[in-house]
Image 1 (tube, chains in turn purple, yellow):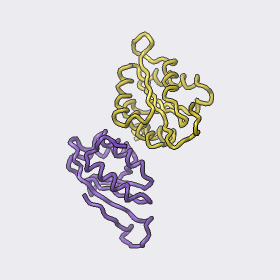
Image 2 (cartoon, each protein chain N blue to C red):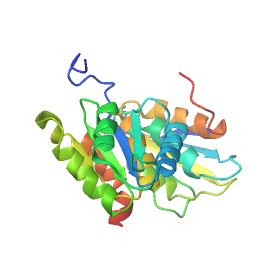
Image 3 (cartoon, chains in turn green, blue):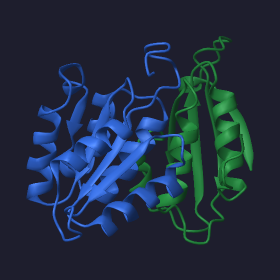
Image 4 (cartoon, rainbow over the protein chains, first blue to last red):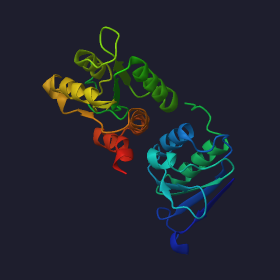
Length: 111
Length: 138
């Protein structure tokens, strides 16, 4: 599990709002990213204001983590690494929460 | 009863499932509750009053009122008659409710799960409908 902060276009501008937060996490769910995990991931992503994108391999296109149709269509297999990036005020919390969700194998939601 | 705060933050679009078969309607509602959770109101109806296959306008109206939310209700249907009877049910609602109900052009199971997922995030009726219909648009 990694969490890092990257400035857009590699520039350091020192401003919090323009920052892109990224994280990556290995998908341990036995069946991969099928319907139920996709719904959980989307629902969690929607709790944040930040723009959040995910992809299942470095070659794939980034998709909107708040679109349940797109997340379901991701069809990420078990053991693939999910990359997450977010920008906006609560981006850091969003990436951390989504990494936790995937790392914990999509537990049934708490509170 | 439902006009406490008008559009409170936790209001969510309700979902109605209308199938020719009560088993399909109930099974779809079960999938929504299990996959999305119970925070979104889901009501369903299926079959005719004699227990056979079919859809029935009064039962659809009842389901709409059961799932009612100030943000509106999205209906997911299966075959032909389910759609026409749902449209008829919408026309027979109280005038102020009619504009807050849409029949989605989407597959019943996938549409219901995706609509409910979108509704759980507090989205508007139009957004919920758009997400449900995303699959058919492609």
